[in-house]
Image (tube, rainbow, N blue to C red):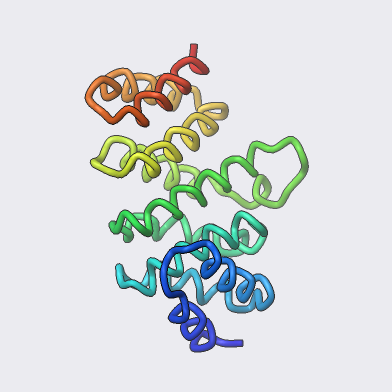
Length: 187
């Protein structure tokens, strides 16, 4: 399978319904050689195809995060390229998957392969998403990711607490509820 096969598969996604995303996710999982092409498509532009690729990337990584390991540098380096909210949500969720796996108690390759530079890029992007004017789902994943990373870097918890305390009253009910949950953990 090659990039054009993957593009054909992604173009067959009619919309974001789970049934369509699952079909394309199965395609990538059954043809892991297409995974690098999936990443390329995600970061090529803000086209509908790159948004569809981001949707599929999230589901692929939820099933098999190990496919991302050889591409961690590429993934974290290119996060700043994406501005479309429909693509940012799955990318913020993948950041959460990465950090959640990194801190899991079971041995895994992510905590061996994730570099300090990768972590710095994840931190920077997640703070940008949290501080910026983004949808609540993106900000919730950013909160969760930063909370986990604060277990390794104390300063993150301090900054996260400041941001959440400052912004909670002026944000949506969903933001407020999740921020209160994180603030409670930070005490």
